[in-house]
Image 1 (cartoon, rainbow, N blue to C red):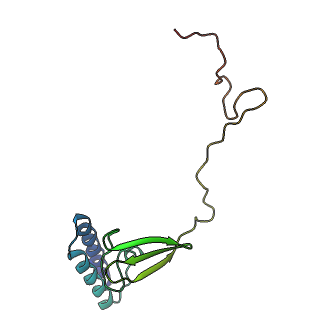
Image 2 (cartoon, one colour):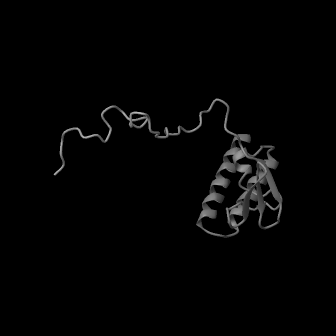
Length: 133
């Protein structure tokens, strides 16, 4: 029974997402309400990724700009429901330890001999004997 409930909840959130992208209407909210009721009836927790898609106060499916406003304040992501006004505050995730930041290309600086740092030998703009016509 629990597995069936989890599958049904996943299906309902998929339907809610599809209806929300199609345009405004009451169906996404109805799907969220049904998914929450199934979760309570069969004592199944909603997955964390699903919890970020709806308002816990009014069960509105959050579509950015239409039913929710997202702001960053003091290291937190604050999502405000535009239907009931309830706020949801979540910490902004930091980078994981051990992960490397994106590689930054080296800055070209002039050396004493006039070649740029990071240039391969022979890549300089010196005259190599060939002429362009």
